[in-house]
Length: 183
Image (cartoon, rainbow, N blue to C red; front, top):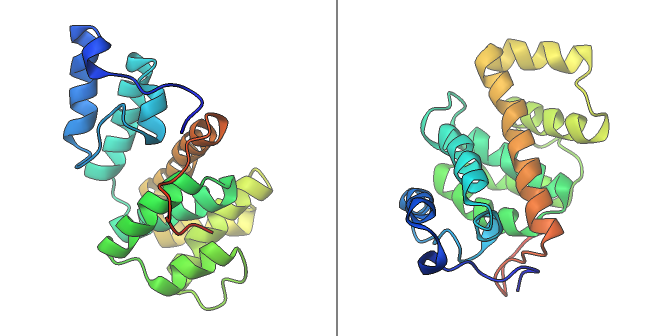
């Protein structure tokens, strides 16, 4: 149960129903107002539309591979203490091939020694953004060398986007479904 009531598609204007439909169309099995961050964001449909557009960029146009994106999302959700996106993205991470060892290392919020070098780099970038609010020169250089400019920008921006998602679900008390594994 969220702190705000669910939005009904029928209660929206035709223009806002179009927003609802766009959001729901690319999120299989998800209704825009039925829960999660979009259950909250649909209280301001124009905002929900813009947030969805950024998310759609990452899904359909990003150069960052899907397994990497999901690891960045999980690391961000873990840093934010955002359980709802963790539940959804742990499932997706496994579907796209994010290694179980990487998922579990992020869940444990501990050592990254067992991770592959690229996995470790992605999680270190996210942790640095949260813990130091910046990337050290050394971490920036490693990120640029491994990821290139585009993927490094995408990594940082994706962490920022899921920070927004984490703030929304935490502020409005959007909880994961009962029985969902989180951290």
